[in-house]
Image (cartoon, rainbow, N blue to C red; front, top):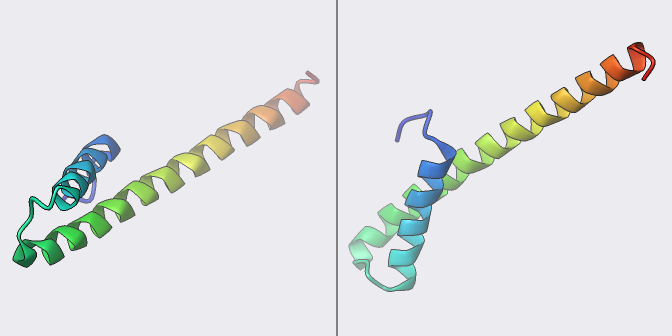
Length: 72
């Protein structure tokens, strides 16, 4: 899996894995591999969400600082 996987792509892959598991459309031998893949996809999604959250916080902090400095 590429380290720069897009969030949406990771979620779509995860949805596909979950659907196959829920529909029991998966072989027992493949189950462990799909669960491992799902865990990796969840890690990718969580890292992207965490990064976005930090970026949003920084933007808000910068805006608040600029507003305070300009007297608004």
